Amino acid sequence: MEHLKAKIRTIPDFPKPGIMFRDITTLLKDGEGLRESIDVLAKRYQDQQVDLIAGIESRGFIVGAALATQMGIGFVPVRKPNRLPGETIGIDYELEYGNDRLEIHVDAIPQGSRVLMVDDLIATGGTMNAACHLVENVGGEVVECAFIIELPDLGGRKVLSNYPVFSIVEFEGD
Ligand code: AMP
Image 1 (cartoon, helix red, strand yellow):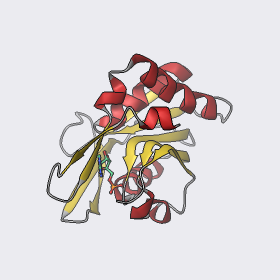
Image 2 (cartoon, protein in one colour):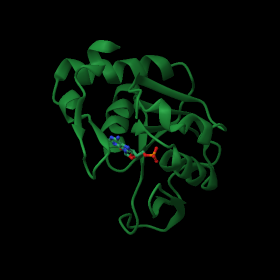
Image 3 (cartoon, helix red, strand yellow):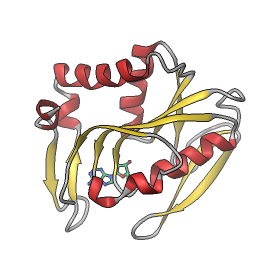
Image 4 (cartoon, protein in one colour):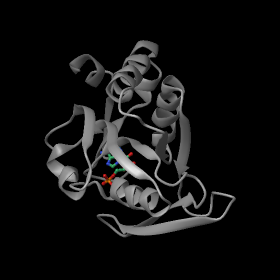
């Protein structure tokens, strides 16, 4: 997958000093790169009886909705606070510096649905772990957590040890 990795741009010191930001906009604007990324995921999951895709705001919406369309299944947004209009439940989780919160509609997922979790990137795993708990709390069963990019040095797989994890490319060293 080196050719896909080569389409992802790195911006040093964004959004703050010391962070190497892995920017997927350069992959998304490349028609072949975008299609191949979605195809890799669709092929992996097409025979796994996935009922729904849950994507995390906001880059998880882009990847997740494209994948849902390709697989012919529905998409559920997991959002930042106070953005969903219906009744929600939320979960607070810790970031490296400070806290954050994610929310989901309480009626988003039919009981027992098999849900594929999608985001653009796994760093520490805290964001995805919180999203998985939310999906389980409203009745879903997590099939796997799928990402385009993994930063293996940050140990996200350990945080997500309750769930299978898949990523298309890895950036080591940060
Ligand atoms: P984490 O909860 O630490 O796994 O962080 C994952 C979330 O933060 C994802 O939604 C990513 O989009 C974003 N993120 C964290 N680190 C980076 C990075 N180095 N480059 C781009 N996005 C990042």
